[in-house]
Length: 209
Image 1: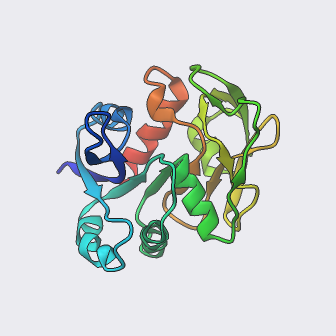
Image 2: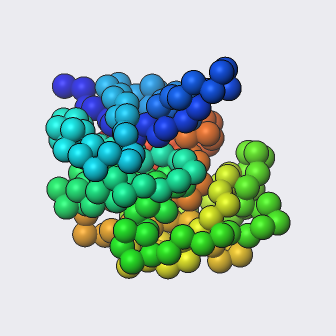
Image 3: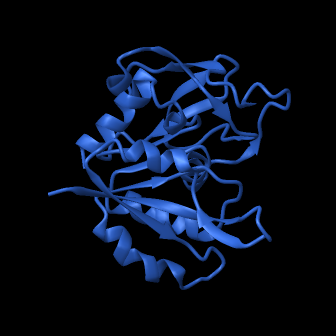
């Protein structure tokens, strides 16, 4: 039976007449389409207090959840991530998704480096050094990898396991070693379609569903 992955869709506005949309970056879906899985978009009304009860059934139906990038954190983001952690549903947070995870567990979101070294459209921007006692290291099988980077904020600390840093000491990956798969990464592996380490990460995530 095919596994089902839920992708959180964030509010957006189209360039055409400012029409409001629910969306995520296209490359998230494109990357997942490499696998024999079902993909469900989960649209969220972020400022509706009752919204979580409406989407809980969809979350329960999914075998794993991806919380992708975005620009703003809402209260329902914390509700979703808290619930996923409690029920041990495999969860991958990307960029803003990682920041939500980190902040939920006693973290803070702060402005990142302002010289543009962590916000670039280049394919590879900087190195990430991975701790050897982490699940991320088990997946990547390397201590140092190169990644892309498109963020203006960072999580300087959190109660989750901090398992990877850039060479300028920006936290790049977090996880909970007591869960099946509860991981946040600051870069965008979905945009590195031919990258070996992106493939290893998604391969592992799909495998454990």
